[in-house]
Image (cartoon, rainbow, N blue to C red):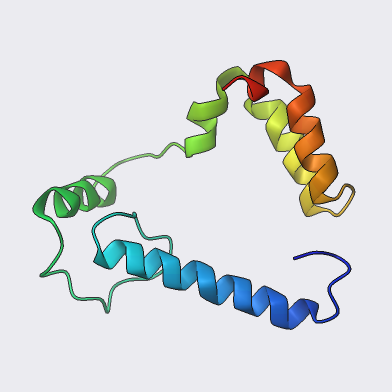
Length: 108
């Protein structure tokens, strides 16, 4: 949510609701691994391969965050830039520009 937004709380709530809606909708279509609680959702219509994928994730002993894999050795630099964005030390435009300054990240 942009820091200049007049209704920050409402905007944040809407963004959260949209993210949940997208996550649950994608789950129901067997296209997105859910990031919200889906225990109440019907699993009977899920694609069998998708269900197997979810079972594998549920039974795993560890995990890997996608950007750790995507950015490889550059992950620490990405995390530093992301932390600055989260702490409002930089804005979204500065965040993107700093990522672009990292040639190895930009080329991925």
